[in-house]
Amino acid sequence: MKQTKLWINGKWESTKETTELKAPYTGEVLANVAKATAADVERAIEGAHQTFQSFKKTTAYERAEILYKVVTIMRERKQELAKILADEAAKPISAGIAELDRTIATYQFAAEAAKQSTGETIPMDAAPGVKDRIGYTKRVPLGVVSAITPFNFPFNLVAHKLGPAFAVGNTVVLKPASQTPLSSLVMAEIFKEAGLPDGALQIVTGSGGELSETLVTHPLVKKVTFTGSGAVGLKIKEKVGLRKITLELGSNAALIVEPSTPLEKIMKRGVGGAFGFAGQVCISLQRIYVHSSIYEKFTKLFVEETKKLVVGDPHDEKTDVSAMIHPDEVGRIKNWIEEAKQHGATVAAGAEFTERTCSPTVMTNVKPDMKIVCEETFAPIVSIVPYETLDEAIDLVNGSELALNAGIYTNVLTDAMKAAEEIEAGAVIINDIPTFRTDNMPYGGVKMSGYGKEGIKYAVEEMTDLKFITMKLNYE
Ligand code: NAP
Image (tube, rainbow, N blue to C red; front, side, top):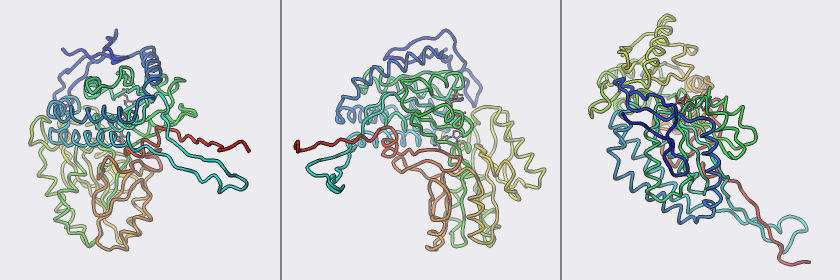
């Protein structure tokens, strides 16, 4: 049985207590995972602080070289890393490879960002009475960053923390989700091989709830970056005090489909957005608002395409949808669907369950206050709702307190721009599903979906301070 350890100051450390890690698809025990105590986290933070004193003095070139080396190693080990995702997250192999390709791109963007961190010259003599003075800004690292990450993209969402932090010279204490520690622990090996100094990356595994106090409030922690559920994000925000914080939280992403849309062409994409990784994606397509003139045809095509998906073993190349992250999730989803049915909703496809899986489910006749519509389902469930006017559709999209990405399909330019202006969301995606993301675009929600932005360049801003420097050119 594999026994994992903590990664502290460049060494593997055992813990007294461990927790069993079970595969979501088979239930088999994959490993006994080290369970850190608050004292372990304190040591990790202190070590990261000490390492910061030298790491902040490394050159942009040196830091970029480390990140480029990570890119090279991950390319070579891609298949092996995808297997870790299939084991601990039940992520189908094809989706795992897609996540790793994005992770590699994320580290590459970070390597490039290391060399692009610049400031500006301030025209000091534009202020009255000021002359013979120069002024400029530069971005400076903060120190120790506490990074807390979720289970659903265990490589790429960790890369969105580590990449920008190391690009600018911060050090990191990483607390991965308890269900996906293996994909973080392998990054310790990879960064070590790439030449990252010992202590710049510390990895502590264990319960987020138990370790949170130390991770979030230790005086040497200068920034907290969290990706996960809204409920946990709020708790962290309440504790964080004056520290910088980024919160990447959940959503119930919506899409508007206008009558000008070529339905056959977008069906595969829509179904992929709704059911990829069993809907356990923060921008998973959950609400589809379709103009009433094309509603019947859209629903028929969507249901047909949904029924083509294969539910099964994540290690099988043919599998589209595998197990939910935990069997309890299946129970929750069943209840939410049942509750919706009792209030008049119809199952148009799916809603078939095993102990660990939920088949891709399409719901119609839903109402805005049903849980499957107004809350984040984080499951393979999508609702299709007809509307009469674009104003009505935009109101329905904006009716949610969750707002990461939203999408609209239309070939009418003025309608596209109206949606871009009026939809309240972190991003409006025109002529694509809201599940679209590249790793260099600014990414982050508004309302209850988040606080701050990721996307390497934007994360670099959030992980640095803007320092101003001025010099008088004479003594007059
Ligand atoms: P989660 O339950 O909120 O857990 C996320 C992380 O927080 C885990 O490492 C967890 O540790 C830790 N944690 C739990 N309780 C904590 C506490 N009281 N204080 C500090 N940390 C704590 O989320 P999840 O189920 O892993 O992920 C799903 C959620 O993440 C969804 O809501 C999804 O939308 C969101 N998400 C957002 C984005 C984005 O970019 N906006 C991306 C991906 C996912 P343990 O595992 O030990 O409990």
